[in-house]
Amino acid sequence: MIKEIQLRTNLIEEKKEGALLHKAAKKLGVDSKEISGIKLLRKSIDARKKEIFFNYKVAVYIDENILEKSAYSFEYKDVSKAKEIHIIGFGPAGMYAALRCIELGYKPIVLERGKNVQERRRDIKAINRDHIVNDNSNYCFGEGGAGTYSDGKLYTRSLKRGDVRRIFENLVYHGATDQILIDAHPHIGTNKLPKIIQNIRETILNFGGEIHFNSKVSDFVIENNKLVAIRLENNNELTVNSVILATGHSARDIYELLHKKNIALKAKSFAMGVRVEHPQEIIDSIQYSCKGVRDELLPAAAYSLVHQVNNRGVYSFCMCPGGFIVPAATSSGEVVVNGMSPSRRNNKFANSGIVVEINVDKDIPKYDQFGPLKGLEYQKSLERLAFTSGGRTQSAPAQRLVDFVDGKISQDLNDSSYQPGLNSAPMHSLLPRLIGNRLRKGFHAFGKKMHGYYTNEANIVGVESRTSSPVNIPRKENLEHPEIKGLFPCGEGGGYAGGIVSAAMDGERCAEAAIELL
Image (cartoon, rainbow, N blue to C red; front, side):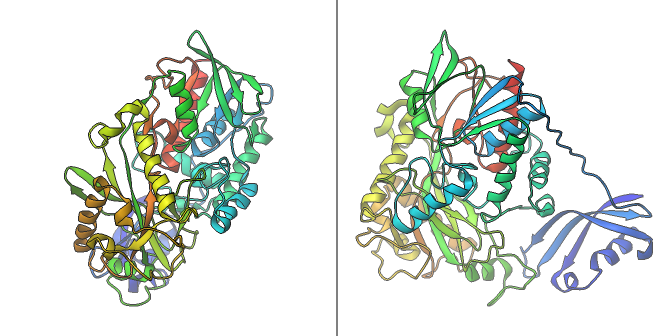
């Protein structure tokens, strides 16, 4: 007999050996000796009150064998001589599209503008150390996409867009810990993701797929509204039938190429703002109602905040407990910041994007001249301004949180993970009123919701501008572009995803759709 039940423990009970076994036996009214095993299905922490609880969903096995096979199996087959599907981009959407093609008996040919995950490290080191940006190999471009070196969060609200569990199980199949199947807010960590991505690459290659790095697409050849070929930057031309466009939200050249060729695009609302950084101990003390170092059983505390200001959302985005802020520009002459955490989340600082919702049809009328690319051009303008304000060193403008809210110029920032340029301007002089004024009101509200959040020990860094694509590439119900046959916009770059998991699910769906129309 197998029973699924909910259990709850406090910190004291959690430290006792066999706590779950005894609680399960008591709840089911059986002797603990009758229980042959307990399998964790879900785990979360409830810290809403001063006493902390661990909530569990478990499967209790009574006189049953606990050893079970996963309900998911990934049966890859040799597709070296099968029909081809071309995939542009090798982030989560492109990777999962390629894997799904192989499962269904089709050969994926992946074109990735950047380098493989190992070689990509050198270019990221150059950004951090020398402020030199390789336009095709950086925190956003290269094998694994932006997710590889941006924390590896797996939480998603897109539960109706595909089989979330299948995405997780496939990550476990390729080397992720099965802890991601249990945690309420699963996370892999930027230090562990590269190996998993390498394993995915090897699966694709071992079963006959192709992956071409340093292969930037420069043009599409279209005849009679049908995509017939892809032209690469080295002038090589590839004949194609179906193309999954999974280039990510930072591939601006692709949007510009489509617009130049009069292929339908739509401006899309997005969000921009800053990164705020606190000592992790402060966030722990707020969330866990503790003083000093948190209990060893508790992970670095996270938070999620939202507030409405003048009918626009101000909210936290990509919160990284025990993490650090990283430079995420994709070309020289711009400054962009992002956050990440290692798997142990053991850095002394916590950071989060705090961003303002921007309605492209109402908030930025001066950019209407750019048509569907108006949000993109607005992004660019603030990133270039941040570069100029940072002393032209690719360093992020920074300021104390309280000084920003009060409109003061900050001095002597606390030592942190970033190094502002020598001539960097304060954030309050960089951000337009549209963003700055709403952020100030948002920070005030957040300080009331989380007492201690609004503090002299918090710094803000800018700009956080790549929360999502400001452009939507439209598609029909069958996921094909409404004007161009054989083109399947996909993932974050198409405007259909907002993270690793949702992008992966969309990649699978696009693979299935592309195959259906072959």
